[in-house]
Length: 227
Image 1 (tube, rainbow, N blue to C red):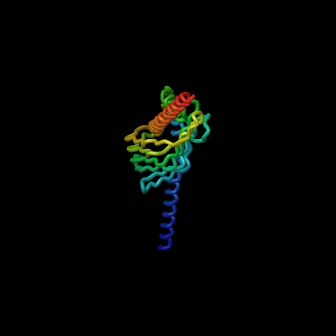
Image 2: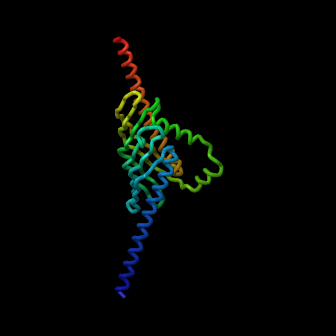
Image 3: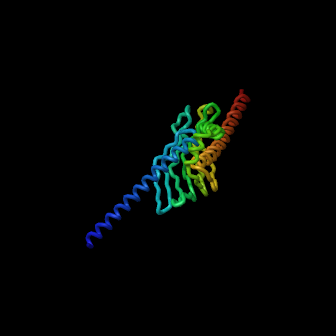
């Protein structure tokens, strides 16, 4: 009798472990797929996610190797890579208390007076201004849950700046980006965050372009003066 009870307990424990593994693995896959889909739609460029790891008991989520592809026509494959995303999540309610992105790898490319981030921002603005169809988008929105990110932060970082036309290669500072109480479907939340991140990087890139153009004008002026 005792032996049978022990075997039963072992089987229950194994079944519980298998169920936990299945739920965790399944959740990781679902979250990874949702992030790729929503972010690709928001950024207008292909977004891939390397790995998602959920800790249901600890209430944490980590995401690594998120790459955002460059728009067509630019030299580098990716505009930026996010290697370290950490979140604090209540898995019972899917309440996202905090999301922090640390050390993003950003590459700003200038081509023909415009940067890759200019094009990405234009794509975001264009897609958000398009009218929603009565059937497709509305029915899709109904199936998406509403989520809240109470605090989002992308820490201060450095970005590589490449301009072949002005022969300028440098790096620049990108200020920290913070948002509070971002609410909506995963697609809507991705749109809000994408717009803020791209806008900040575009602003810094624009300042760098103005500095480079001013430097060229000064060089031209003094060059002519010597002649």
